[in-house]
Every structure is written in structure tokens, then in C-alpha cells.
Image 1 (cartoon, rainbow, N blue to C red):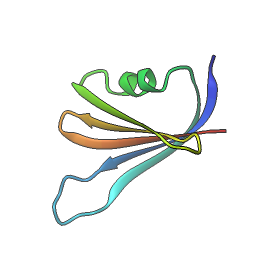
Image 2 (cartoon, helix red, strand yellow):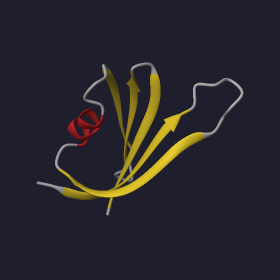
Image 3 (tube, rainbow, N blue to C red):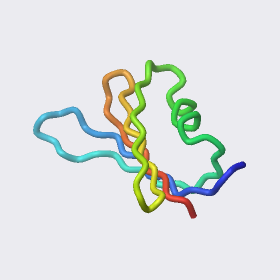
Length: 76
């Protein structure tokens, strides 16, 4: 069953002297959070590490082709 989430997608900058990151926000109806993340990175070898917080928030840490990213899902 699909649930509606606010999704925050962060892409971390690999440059040593630059701590900035790209941050994207969206609302989406999602059935499977891990499959959703994998579908966003179809062309890359992806490692996922899921973290379920007590408040229901789910954070999925991603290493996609050596680039660190994080997806945070908060149910609406």
C-alpha cells in the first residue's frame, strides 16, 4: 500500500574545502522506500544503509558510484 512522504534528497559534495551539498525536496506516494531509491540510481552500483528512527522517519544512506547521498522520508 502506497503512503505519502515528504522526501529530502541530499547529495554531498566530495570537494574537501566545500561543505555545501545539493538538497532537493518533493512529496511522493511510495510503496517501497528502498525500491524507490534504487529506481533513482538505475545506472549505478548502489549500496544502501537504512536507518529507522523512533518518530517514524526513515533515512536511507546511499553510496552510488562513490558519491554519498541521503534520502530522508517523513510520512505526511
